[in-house]
Image (tube, rainbow, N blue to C red; front, side, top):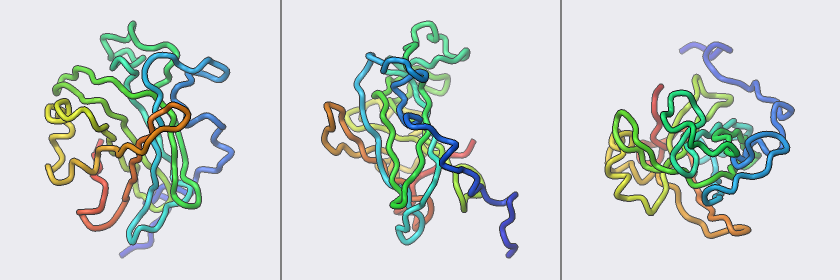
Length: 198
């Protein structure tokens, strides 16, 4: 077994000075812009842990998603002209000493994809010390069971593991619904979060 080198592991290359307050708020399109008024504002929070439930400090999480109507401000989206101009659709958070992270965003809309109809979801990439490449997963939301059944990405996950990709409701905060999505980077198959390859 070789000792990991800088080519084998990501980080720790993420000083806190790299981030600004508000980077984890997807409802703001640009610095100084007004928050988006389209869609239901939600909070997605959770904890990143590794084997034996050890919290992961200073992990970087990047989130990207469609707006509330299921559009992206991207040239490949045929509905780009209908995308919310005040919704960036991308944000970055990092974990604290307890492995906790949080995003403020809007409930994403579902949309049609070449592979099939996509259920409302948020894509998450995790980077940090100890990972040889970024880990990618997808967060789905309760109350969309019919859409989950048709989603081609969720169908790739064994049925017994699909509930691990559905966020758990945790009440409200300042009028925004809270959803919890904990991420287990390593551990027994029954505990580890399902991840997707590029």
